[in-house]
Amino acid sequence: MDQFAALRALRAIVDEGSFTAAAERLGTTHSAMSRQLRQLEEHLQVRLLDRNSRRLSLTEAGRDYYREAGALLDRLQEADDRVRAGQAQPSGIVRISVPQVVASQELPHWLPSFLQRYPRVALDLSADDQLVDVVGGGFDLALRIAPSMPDSQLVARELASCPRILVAAPGYLARHGLPRQASDLAQHLLLGFSPTPALPPWQLHGPRGATTSIEAGQRLRVDATPALYAAALGGMGISLFTALTVQEDLRSGRLIRVLPAWHAGQRRYFALYPHARALAPKVRALVEHLAAHYAAQSGAAG
Image 1: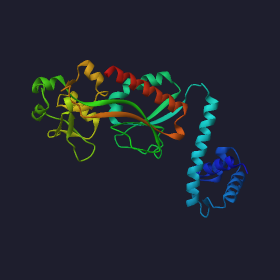
Image 2: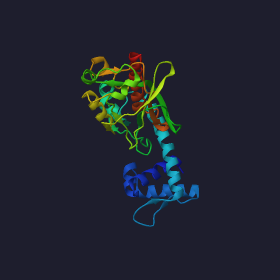
Image 3: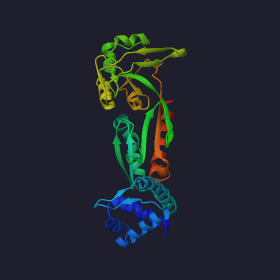
Image 4: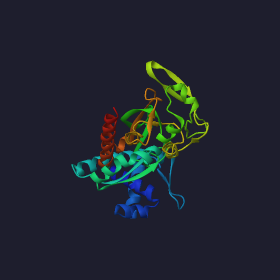
């Protein structure tokens, strides 16, 4: 028995839902597919598929074996692709999940240059502030901003680190004045952001280890960062953003940093990807592009 051929047959049968469609996918016959599956089950001495109805279904043992076999075939395909590709131009679709703030404010700073550099790569991008199941959701890559990343089965490559800072539009500060010390914030409109019903206070860190807790969102709170960004630019109050997100706005004067000696903790940018896909040329190209971009941004911010 050719075990790799049998594994490919099992995966095709499950994916396609029938022996006939699987045979067409692999360019073989219904009888050959049936024979390979039977030989695999005899080799393992366990039933992998229930075939008592019109619809095929994996047994409990079959589900476990299908998952493990799929991961093995992915790694084998990855090795094949790497050898065949050599120095070839990366190509294909990269499915990526990014926070809303990256999609709305940061995307223009790195996506056009990536697509220009790699014309054979396309991006299928999903913007979501919730933690997604990278593997279960079929993503090749996720970009996340967080203080740290919990241990997981994913590769977590840190791309950058920067503080969350206080910013406001010039128009707002012209009307309400510029805070001189942290206690002045109590007299200002503080824009609250939280994707959940609970709105935690701002935990600010200042000179010589000083800290203070400030309630925000009394007049306006939002659950989406694009709305928070629009409100800040519209002069509706003082808000918190990662420094890299508003770097261009600070340079242009669209926003002004408030209380420069204070910040609301560090945020780190992480690229998350499954081990089995980590070396795919198209994914590796995007990860390296993001790493170079955020390294340059961090250096400019410093």
